[in-house]
Length: 130
Ligand code: FES
Image 1 (tube, rainbow, N blue to C red):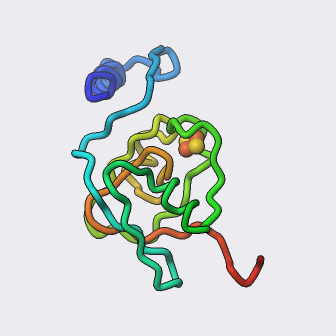
Image 2: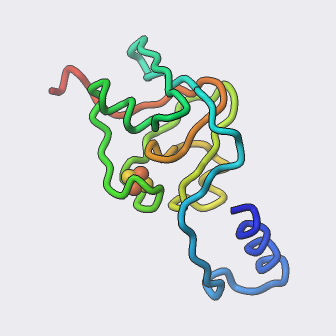
């Protein structure tokens, strides 16, 4: 991924139009080491640990938080959830969001992306609406 990012920056830096750049990706291994991190659910008092070997999507769904998904490869964006706060750093491992969206840290693809530290998210699941 760093090579593809460098190629894209070089392409843009040379004044070439981004839509003319063709590349293919098969997911991203991220820029941070894979480690355990914590996810706090907005307004619920619930905090979940995401171990190294499991995805945030898997932990959220097995905990009953009902996050939609499709590809589980960071390509479709269906599993994207809102990020409210970051105490640490997000490692965006999807190929769905553009660089600008990743830098904003407003959303995260729960199927592949990870974090260092604790992030607060809003899954939009409302227990009183069920
Ligand atoms: S399920 Fe497709 S990007 Fe996460």
